Image 1 (cartoon, rainbow, N blue to C red):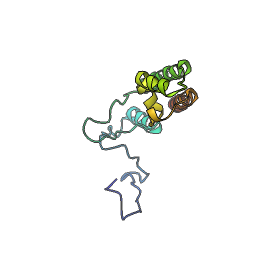
Image 2 (cartoon, one colour):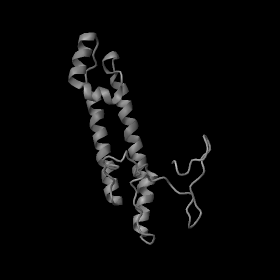
Image 3 (cartoon, rainbow, N blue to C red):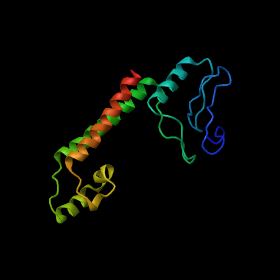
Image 4 (cartoon, rainbow, N blue to C red):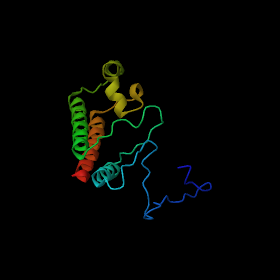
Length: 149
């Protein structure tokens, strides 16, 4: 963004030098396809529409980016399946009722608790909080899948 920022609070819009339309910030790791490769450009548009871009700190790249519409849908479906498994954890978990149970629950389930709450040991995470957290993630993924299809 430093190449388009002007002044302290004002930001100029980056426009395409060819058509004059606004450009999307795809990240420093983005390599644009050839101008006439319509299929790849449509895929890039799909990626951007669901929030996938080529941003990273520069150390190891932007991570996995599906290279086709089918792979993108598969990626989101697998992510949704993982989120549904997380919901199953919260549905079957026995909520702790005292400090001793809370500490035991934390020792056993710290990884799952940490995904939902940053306070981990200091507060009891209710099962409904976990279920709601993961249901929201499932809804986000399903809306992204619907944008792609």
